[in-house]
Amino acid sequence: MDFAAPICVIGGANIDISAKYTVAVAASGESHNGQISTSAGGVARNIAENLARLGSAVQLITGLGDDGFSASIRKSLNLPLLDISLCYSASDSPSDSYLSMYDRTGELINAVNQMQLVNQLTPTYLQPFEQQIRKSALIIADCNLPPETIHWLADLSKRPSLFVDGVSMKKITRLKPFLDQIDGLKCNRQEAAALLEFVVQTPPDQLVDSLHQRGIETVLLSLGAEGVYLGRFGQQTYFPLPAPRQTIASVAGAGDALLAGFLYSQLRDTSDEAAVHLGLRAAQLTLTCTEAVHPDIGSLCAEQTGAV
Image (cartoon, rainbow, N blue to C red; front, side, top):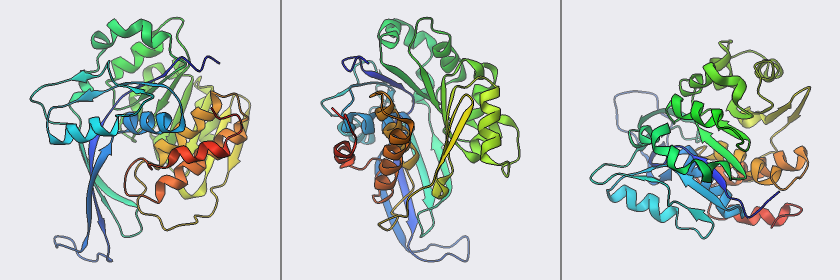
């Protein structure tokens, strides 16, 4: 593996506005005590920051606005190994944003997103950067992207592996027309069921097997607090989530940390078991902070054999 080649991450970057109840809520239409915070977020942005903090060179391609929130997002990406020179930059445009509500245990209740800038990442915008994308160590795309953009990435000849994050039950269905062109997919149980048009109660091993049958070689299926299923063609392995050592602050960004840790390890030719375990440790660490990326995520590299 050429560690000099960056990982190319393409997709959404936004400001996360999070509200968490600190009390049990019984009635709607009322104001309740809680905590409100803002931080840089977005699936692709989170993955890119995690990878850079772990020690990988990253080329992030996302959409950036021109407002106070944009300054916060850009500041979060000011890391030595993270290149944002190919990002779409819009003057006089607000940043993409994601407003989420969590119960007092940190579980997501509901959310609203405003994602206009990521829609500017069209094939036409990306074509001038085709050679940089081809020469990357790996392409990671999120389903915030327009479907034609993900299809364009999948169609690239002589490209590296393409790993896609499903993002949500609605957005993952964008992959249906070209699912067999995707090398790897990370999603949760609900997203997998939506993509396959199965009931949510479908056993995870059946979900993974069905995704393999549709041509996806590697499936990383998150079961939340229950752990992870890793599927390769002809083989599945279940990895339970270790008991949390600290109180959960927020679930935001945990899935992105899981994928970043897994792929960081995989690119260093470690075993599947080591890769999933690093991903799970990254997710658990992220659960302990209110931001989407834990600032000390790089400390996990000391636990990874062969980390550079």
